[in-house]
Structure formats: structure tokens, C-alpha cells
Length: 541
Image 1 (cartoon, rainbow, N blue to C red):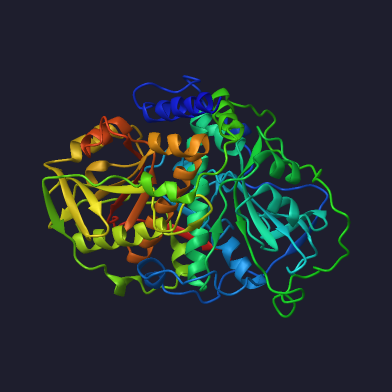
Image 2 (image 1 turned 135 degrees about the horizontal axis):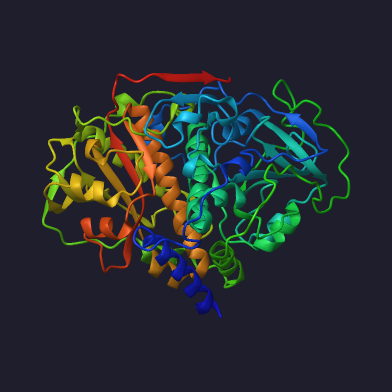
């Protein structure tokens, strides 16, 4: 039965990779933009507890976060202020953004109902389908209970009172003894209304981007976070009162606070007191903007295949066998040292100014080889994380470079060797035509891009070793690398855009992966932006 479920996931992933040539069902689907869901989930009839702003607190320079070894151990216990920063700088609303660009919806962004509100963590299509719940124990600054982080209000909504942390620990073998947990869920409709059957691939990478953003923020405060990716999904969904086919937990993050009362003081949450009740399942209704919601069969099938594959978590050491294999290639290019002097900006400020370079790349100023080297060196720092299923020294992903306009580097495709700080030559020659033909959207001119980074993984081997859940484990790391690339590029002053709109098969061929177990999953566009642009950037805090 486990093999059958793995086959469902394998067939889904293969359809994702081939969608540039064979459209996924339902063919001809058109989003109903007038009936799209709200970007913010809001519970009805609940009490809200506003938290500190979460911005303005000093964080470490970006260079220290991405180019130096992460701090040993978990670091200091969490406080109200550090939790506020973690949430506000990742999934909280930071500003309103408006730029005339090549994206298909830019003309409606001038209208307030269609405004684009920037956040620190990236999301496929700007849909932001992830929700964050906090299962708080007695050591935190709020009475024990289950809380939802309301992104529209930057506040916690109390859904149920009572210490339910034991339920989370029982559902997660790798949760440890923490007295509080952040649970990341996905509301499928918030993404599927636009991407239909492609949704599951996008949202599992979204979860990785959020986890990667949290890791960056935690490191910038001298802390480390751990991720639990192997758990009893249905048990946690019941705890949160979720209907599994509509919203489901994707990750659990233990969050250790200090001893009881440690959160009190000038940063304590207003009105945080209260008597904890016996506790129970969440039964609060939430607001749904869409008059009609629907479930897409491929999304339901792949999600159920992951949940129904109940094999025990493999020994984390198994992941070391899934690292992309070394390759014998034609030549090497030594890379310059990273430009750590240009990464001195506070990480919080960098996350606040992170944005996507839709249609803004200009080829008249090539990407510097030292700039490329800096983004590469910083991006692979996302492979070092603490998780229940993957050891920190593993890294399930690889990086390839399709160089188009990089000063001092012949056009062509290369494999990044992080250990040797070099590029291995796959093939050299003009690449712009291949990139342009392989990209089937109109929001970028690939001829103007400096370079494309392709994030890869050995997906079939991962499914064989981990079962169906291996797909989510691998996609989580892919998403984390994309978020880190965005962050390093923003600190460096280099334009960046993460896309899924390539013909994966064509890119696999371009980097020499056709016919292999390793495939490309996600793509990062890098280059310099045009200077004659007009931006409207209104900060909320």
C-alpha cells in the first residue's frame, strides 16, 4: 500500500515537471478573480491580543547570518519581542508596493482593493496561503491555549484555552520537550483558486520559504530553530479544528520560552492574563470571502497519499544518501570571495525591502562574477538546518547556474560546487535563446537576465527512502533556498525573482540532468535592474 501511495506522488510530480508541454487538469481552467479568497484568515467571535510591532529591534548583519557558521545550540529562550519579530518580518504585512512592471496584473494594483501588500517571506504568485498557529504552554506570555496569528492585525486570536502542548508532543516524535509550538498550515483554496492542480507543488515550497525565513531571523537573534516534518497530520488537524482537505499542517516548530512569568515586563502582551480552561478542540468559524470554493482532485489525491503513508520516520542518517551526486564535468571556474562587505545591512531591514524584479532586469549592466559568487555562497547556507528527518550536514538540494550576462564568465550552464567554491562547466555557449524559449510566462525578458539559478533534488531516491512524505521534506528545503537567495540578493543590491514557469524538461537538458534521478525544481533569476523606474513604497511600520 505504501508503494501505491508513493506512485500517486510520483505521478503527480512527473505531471508538474511536464506541465510546460502537457497541461495539468483541469485544462483551460480560468481563475475567478472576482470571487478570490481573502489573503488573510480571520476567525469570528474571538478575542485578539496585539503583540509588539516586531520591527526596529536590532538584528545581526546579513553577512553574519548567511556567510558564517550558525550559532551552536538553540541559543537564548524566546521572548515576546523576538517572537513578534519572527512573525512580523516573515508573514506579517510590512508595506504597500506598487511598480509599473511586466507582471500581468500590474495595471490593477493602483486600485486599493487590489493593492499588493509586501511581506518578508516569498510566496508563489503572492497568494500567501500559509497560516501560523501557536500552541502555547504555561511558560509563555499568554495563558496556555491555541492561538492563530492574524496577519491582517499582527495579533494573536485565541481559539481555545488550556494547555494542549502534550497533544502536539504526542503527535510529533521529534518535538522534544518545548513548552510551546508554532504550527504552519496551508489553506489550499488560497492558492488553488489561481493554480488549481499545480497548488500542492507551490504550497509545499511556500512552507519551505517560510521556514527558511524563520531560520534566518532566528540566527540573526543568536537562536536556532528546529523543524518537525514527520508527525500525525490528522491528529494535529483535529487539534486545530481543521478539515484536512481544506487546511492541513505542513510543519511544526518547537518554541521554548522562559520559565512562567518570564514574558512579563514592558514587552508583555496586553491583556495576556486569564484562567486556562480544560481545553478542547477548536470550533471557531473563520471568514470566507469566496462565495464558492472547490477542491481539485490531483491536489486531494497527492495530499491524501502523503497523509496515508504512515511508515515510521527513517533514521535521519538516511538523508545523507540523498545528497546530489558529484559529477565528472569538463572544466572548472574558480569563484571570487563573497562580497561580505556589501552584506552589512541589518537582516530585518533587508527582509523589509525584499521584492520581486518583475520585468525590471536590464542587460546593459552584467551581473558581476563576485556578485554571483556571493549569492551562491549565501544561498547554500539554507541547507544547514535542524530537522527531525534531515541531519544538518546533509543538504538534499543542488544548485546549477545558467549564465547569460555574467562579467568574466562565458555564457553556458554550470554546476555549483559549494565545498570547492567553484563552478563546474556543464557546457558553454549562448544560453539566452534556450532560456527564453523555455519560459512560458510574459513577466520577464530572459534575454536581459544575468543568470538563472536552478535548484535541484533527487526526487525519486527521496521518495524511495522517505516514502510519500519525502516530497514535502525535499520541497521544504527547495523553498528555503529560494527565500535565502532572495534575501542575499536584496542585501547585495541585486535584482531577484523566483519562478516556476520554466519547462523543467528543457532546463534539465540544459544542465545535463536529463535521464537522471536529479531534477530541477525551482528557479532564481538574478541580474541588475533598470534605474528609470518609479516605485510607490509605503511602509506600515
